[in-house]
Amino acid sequence: MIFQMETLPSVKDLSVKQKTVLLRTNYDVSLKNGEVTSGTRIDESLATINYLFGQQAKIILLSHLGRPEGKVNPGLSLKPVVNYLGQLLKKEVPLFSTINEIDKNQPMVMLENLRFWSGEENNDLNFTKSLANLGDFFINDAFACSHRQHASIVGLPQFLPSALGLDFLKEVEVLSGVRENPRRPVTLILGGAKEDKLEVMEKLLDWANAILIGGKLSQLINRSSPTKVIMACLNPDGKDITLESVEKFKKIIVQSGTIVWAGPMGYYEDEKWSMGTREIAKAIIGSGAYTVVGGGDTEAALTKFGLTNKINYISSGGGAMFEFLAQGTLPGIEAILKKQND
Image: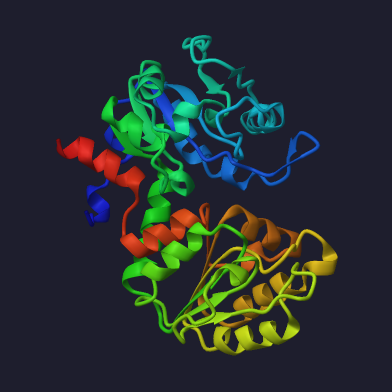
């Protein structure tokens, strides 16, 4: 289903005044020593949170963090997230470790990491119902997670009146423009190690003019790919791309009209292996192309290099961004539209 922007249900379309709202956020942030190191994803949820507060709605926040695989992992608790959020809002945000314990009388609370329950990733019906029983409405403001068939993404809209949050709608607006009317030539740059990017790449072969593959991904792809797919070589230690690969990529980047980038070129966190990611970032910024960057690792790299303000748009999701560019929609959008049209 390809939709018109104006047909997407917004949080502002629902009568949430003094009601309880389940708000799915994307608080999958980087942590160090028990503290949030980059709070951009939390900051981006404030527009929807503040709108709901203005409607005197009670908010139950839902999010995941990392990949605990259905087991409680104290190292992936959302405690640092509620601490960060509490400082932003200047109010305490209580965190509840079980669904039954949640105090619905509080203005805003948070449920512990959704992926501590196997029912989240399995889209289990009973788990979904137990979440749905907590509130009157569901708002999805987690664009970066909405390519997943998870309970809190595609399950909840079956049981509650649902809509999209303000940050989600902004993502759709920007990426729809890039998808439908890009300045050409279009160059995709894929890095990191998540293999699902390769599946999406196949779907974008016709849309993109060139696809550059770096990072661990360059080892996972068939070297006899189409000519528009250009792969980096890695250094002998496998932790960064070679200088020759950087130069090869730069020749294509400089000619681009639109660049979409997700995934670093190597272990940028360590200065020894940051050259590839840094040089590609500088080339992208210097190209004059319209630039879109997606994914937490890519944003973290740009933050490290002090270059985030030189990018035209930073999407909260890498995989979700590419999936949207390929399909023009996401399972999380379709779940809400399906319920609306039933």
